Image 1 (cartoon, helix red, strand yellow):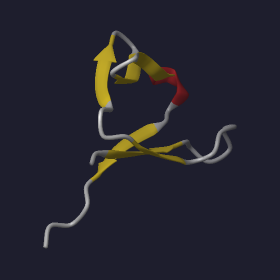
Image 2 (cartoon, rainbow, N blue to C red):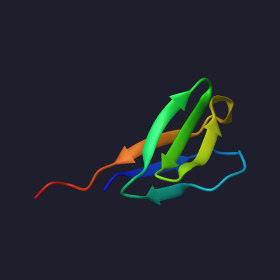
Image 3 (cartoon, helix red, strand yellow):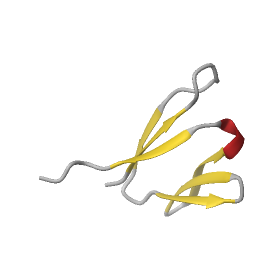
Length: 61
């Protein structure tokens, strides 16, 4: 299951978020990072926000 960790630069408003969703996809649309599921977009982050999005995979056994 893909998981995405969203972190914001220190001093900016916003908490770190870990999103877990089997059907979640990440796309770049212009200056926006868009996370969407089967129902459509659920989170959009503008590039100027300075947030970092990291995919976190479970370790393989």
